[in-house]
Image 1 (spheres, rainbow, N blue to C red):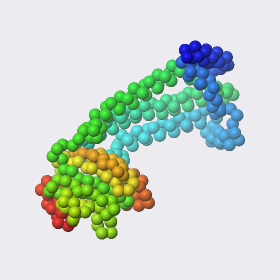
Image 2 (cartoon, rainbow, N blue to C red):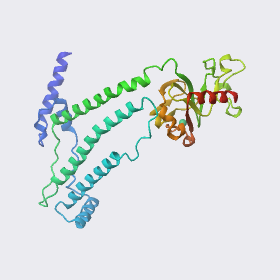
Image 3 (tube, rainbow, N blue to C red):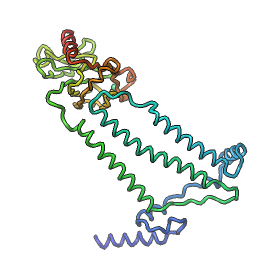
Image 4 (cartoon, protein in one colour):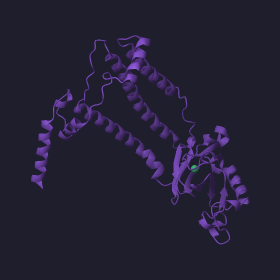
Length: 343
Ligand SMILES: [Cu+2]
């Protein structure tokens, strides 16, 4: 085996040595396989030589409009810089930004988002301005020189790749704890448990009632026309007798809530931007998520927030919406009793 491998390596090295050496990068001391495969890649076509008639006409038109000798390069560099400036200004002024946060875990999510955004934003600005500068610095001087294709340097490319890997792994570690707190750590024992059911194209919410237990669901008995949306058999299943099914998700502020997401048909996604929660509902699975709504959530918009489906789930996807109503503990108990009386 060892002899066979050594023979293959020798053959590859010989083949690499036999390749014609063109361009600046070919002599660099990169890893052998990288050099070998990179030298077999076809060179991209030159942008400035062998123009097609259309390219020639476009370049000629711009040349006539902006003059020759690099005015077009200046225009392109300015457009790049302007796009960068407008993007940074829109994001810096928080145009199209997040809605107010109403969950206890919200600030941690927003912080992660801001840190990620600042790091990637600095890279974005540097890359765009660098591109604008290079377009200007390497413009046509009108002396008929042809552009030369450069393959780059393996060492610098490996450095970039390593830096990007460190950056993304670092961001992942930063976000992991927040993610784990929301998804891998169970809810508090005193949390209010509510099932959230998605179907094409409506939401239903089930509370376990005074016994604290959800009754079993019988898919064969699911019938929207009779109002038995979840297929409950209240006559034969004792745990189903006091279950409360509602069209609005009512919760008390300041109390931990655990939602158990379930789907009747296809994949849906429970999304409340103000809660900073978006989670898929997968048929056949129970997806638990938990959160606590802040007391301030009562002040914003009367405690009423839209729940939307964020997964394209069919023709009526656009109308799959419901409302989250946050109440004081006292009002919540009253509301739940009213809902129980309507079952
Ligand atoms: Cu949906």
